[in-house]
Every structure is written in C-alpha cells, then in structure tokens.
Length: 511
Image 1 (cartoon, one colour):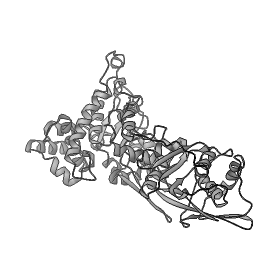
Image 2 (cartoon, one colour; image 1 turned 60 degrees about the vertical axis):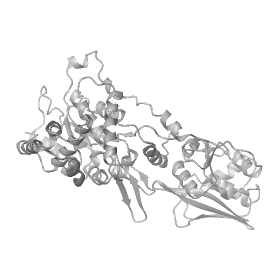
Image 3 (cartoon, one colour; image 1 turned 120 degrees about the vertical axis):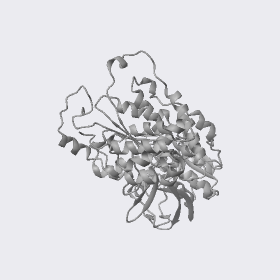
Image 4 (spheres, one colour; image 1 turned 180 degrees about the horizontal axis):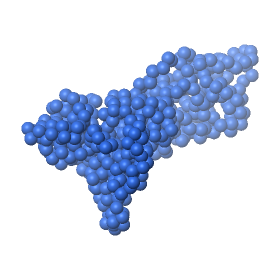
C-alpha cells in the first residue's frame, strides 16, 4: 500500500516541502531513495527501536521510501518521525485518513521520545503558504513555530501521541502564541548598561551617534582603555526591534537551531567571533549551507575585537556584505542568499605593543612594525567604517567616582527619536532606513551645506590631509548629529564634530 507524508527541508532561510512516499509490498528489503544523507539513512535503526518500544513494528516486507523532489539533497535526523508515521500508515498498523493535511517533523530517540529540530520557523511559514492545516513537531520547537498564525501547531513529546492522534482521534494540545503580546513582553533591557562606564564621555557620545545613524565604528586604544566594555553596551542603546525585524532575525537563528524557548527574539543579536574564525564561518556556506556570523548578527551588532589579528582574507570578505547588506554564497551545486544588515563595531590597539597613543606609556614598537600592523586592515574595509575614534585610558579620579553616569535607557530615548526622523525621511525607499545606508544621491539631497560649512569642510580636508573617501562619511555622520539635535539642516558645528571621528584617515597618524 502507498502512503504520502509531508516533511520539509530548509535551504538558506527558506523551506521546501518534501513529499515522503512510503510503499509497502510483498518481499523483503528496505530501500530509501531521494538523495538522503547518512543521518537519514541511519534512521531505520532509530525508527525500529522507537516503534518496538511503543508496541508497533517495522513490517517484514519490502519497504520503498522516496523523498521527493528526488534531486534535492536531504540532510539531518528531523525526518525520523515523518518516515515512522509513513511506515505505520502504509503497513495499515494505524488508520490515518487526514495524514496529508499536516507537516510532520521530529528526531526520534530509541524510546520514542522526540528531540528538537532546526528551522522550525521557516518550515511553519512554508506550511502556511502551501495551505497545510497543521504542523506536528517536538514540543521544544512548538513556541517558535507557533509565531506563524493561521496554522495549527502541535508540540509533542512522544511518537505515541502522534499515533493516537491519527489512529484514535485523540486531541493534541495546540500551541497558541499571541505574537505581538509575546514580543512586547520580552522587550526587556540587556544586562550591560552604559551607567557602568566611568568617564569616557566623548566615546559614549560617539557610540550614541553610531547607534542613531546605524554607522559602523572602530575604536582605537591601548589595552584596558574600555573598548570591549563600550562595544558590549552598544546593543543596550539601539532602538528596539520592530516585529518585522524580530521575525527576520528569528528565522535566521532558527535555521541553526539557536532559538530559545521564548519563540520570537526580541533582543538585537550581539555576535563577537574569535579572531581565529575562518571566512566560511564568518560569511556562511559549507557542504550543507549554513548562515555565518554576519547573518546571525543581522539587525544587530557584529563585534570584531582586535581587528588586525583577524586573517586578512577573512576581513576582505566583509567588504561586499557591508555594502549590499546581504551575502550571496555561490557554489557549483547551489546558490543561497542570507540577509546581513548589521552594525560593525571593531576595536584595535594602535600598535603591536598596544600603547602608541597612550601619553604616559613608552613606545615599544618601531614605526615599521606599526605600519605593518595597521596595514593588515585594507583601505577598502576602512572605507566602509564611518567613525574612527581614539580611546584613552580612564584616570583613577574618574574610576573611583561615586557619581552614576547616564543610563542606557536615557541614551536610547534620544537614539530612538533620531531613528524616527530617519524612518520618516526614507519612508518611500525599500532599501534605505537610516543614515548609514544613504547613497551618493541621497547624501546630496539631505546633507545640503551652507557656504560657511562647505569652507570649513574644505579647510579640514586640506589641513588634515583627509582622503576623498572621508568626504561622504563625514556628511553622513553630520546628518546623524543634526538628527540627534532634531535640526533640519546640517551646519558647521555638526561638520566639525564629524571631522573629529576620522582618526585613521589622517595622513601621518603614525608619525
């Protein structure tokens, strides 16, 4: 007898419905076709033990299973439950009239209990699109899948529950989540707060500007100056995620199985990969493509600590995603696109010894060593970083102060107000949402300078030997400074503040 059961394969951040056809015929044998990987091929051992331990069995007949479309590679152990239910239905051990109305996924343990799967959210989205009535999956993933409305989601703990549901008509408990309510309930503030940072008022101001305009930023300073501490607190002042951003971010994290029990992610991601990371781990890819760190930090922050320690090839792959805000991985057998709209925050020592710009420390590195150290970061990569800021150590008087500095909540209010201005400004554009994303045409339109400001910028560029690439960056940053003040036009004070944030563009910075 032939039975059809439906599962799903995740490719990139999208799912494809897989039709599992199970045919039980006279003879002996077990044939699994349709490009399954080793984890799926091994599933018959798990299925046999799980059925045996729940009072059922794999029939001693010829079983042929086809996973269609047969030319698409299937991977992972999430098809165990799909195959097991199909075998039971095809061998008439259970009655399953409405089997084709459901997507069924889950990894089986030998006792019949279920282990969590990856990609539950993209699978649920696809199931709703294709008109399935419901989605049966492990209870650990139920909240994640229940984000999708107009789809019945049933989280189960054991294969016996599925068998009783189809065979005896027993009712399964549906997982229902009010997505909006759940989302706003989880909008709490991160553990790191700017009130913990003593002194460094100028750097905090810089961070506020970066957050308000979505600008990439690099912090340059000696060890112990507070670069990492400041970077970790950046997500706490970013505007709260919108529901659309939260869904997008959760989808990517779902593919790699990193969504917590809360279902929808309400916090902006903060990713801080080690400097030994490979380019595939950073960008994504692999034999079975997976999102990399830049996609996992989508709508959040990617922090690269000690930037010159990263391999040059790894840093160069960042150039295109920073520009296009998505990354396309092309291989012989597949092409997959992941979103990667993130804020890059980098930190570095100014020299191999670390103390080049510390006025109180001896210079231990020669100019040639420092040049070699800094040359690891290419001009085109620095070109995509809007703000360069020098961080100096905090004196003891500031560290020992009892006075509490401004909290993240207070800074976040100003940042959110500035972002609201930008959202309104770019409401007609699909690709631009904040100042850092502006193209040349928009810069000319929204960063109009009066004669005095133009002269100031010209003088600064000539005196400080600023490169041509600094010009657009200065205008973008000054536009954000004006938005923070709630001012319509960019003036001289905004320009002069923005010029301060281009340390690495000054020729002779090493001299």
